Amino acid sequence: QSALTQPASVSGSPGQSITISCTGTSSDVGGYNYVSWYQQHPGKAPKFMIYEVTNRPSGVSNRFSGSKSGNTAYLTISGLQAEDEADYYCSSYTTSDTLVFGGGTKLTVL
Amino acid sequence: QVQLVESGGGLVKPGGSLRLSCAASGFTFSDYYMTWIRQAPGKGLEWVSYISTSSTYTNYADSVKGRFTISRDDAKNSLYLQMNSLRAEDTAVYYCGKDGSQYYYGSGVDYWGQGTLVTVSS
Image (cartoon, rainbow over the protein chains, first blue to last red):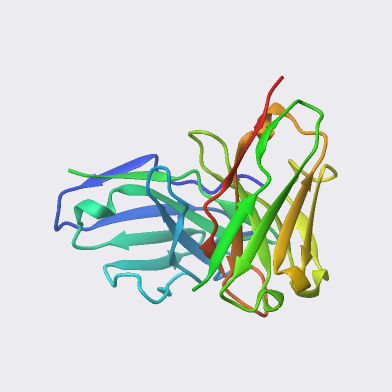
């Protein structure tokens, strides 16, 4: 199972919006609405940010939103804040009854 | 509140074995699928294995199939990962995670432990 494809890095200024893409295949992202997004700060465990493509767990800011089109999922962060600087990972359920993660995207807040 | 605490990591020689444990609290452990995920130093997340409720179903990444075994003890609220025939490429922080759904796998890992480091080196 190949990893999902994410851009290695994205950046934005405080207050701006950014979008991170996550591209898979019809066997994972395109085949199920089971895409999740995680935020990871250095030295910390990942934090659950989005589940089932568009849903936010309780306690996650509404500045974070998810969407999907075909085999690509997206995480959008609006009103960028300094504390959003972190690594972001997508994951998807697959036809092999596994999870597959993206390679991760480093977000820099300028 | 949900807590997941991994233990059992350490330094092991190639070909050796290690058993990781994950102690769960703050939720009805027996009601949820559980997952192991690892992260090699400076690298991304890699899914390792999952186990369903009642241990009915398990599955493994190709990279560990035949070498690792996931299990759970609902009476002890604990998840385990038996790792045999360890290789240098198994070196990573291993996280246990709780799945977000009680009824199916894949909705996402909503709670993570702090991780335990496994180093495979001679």
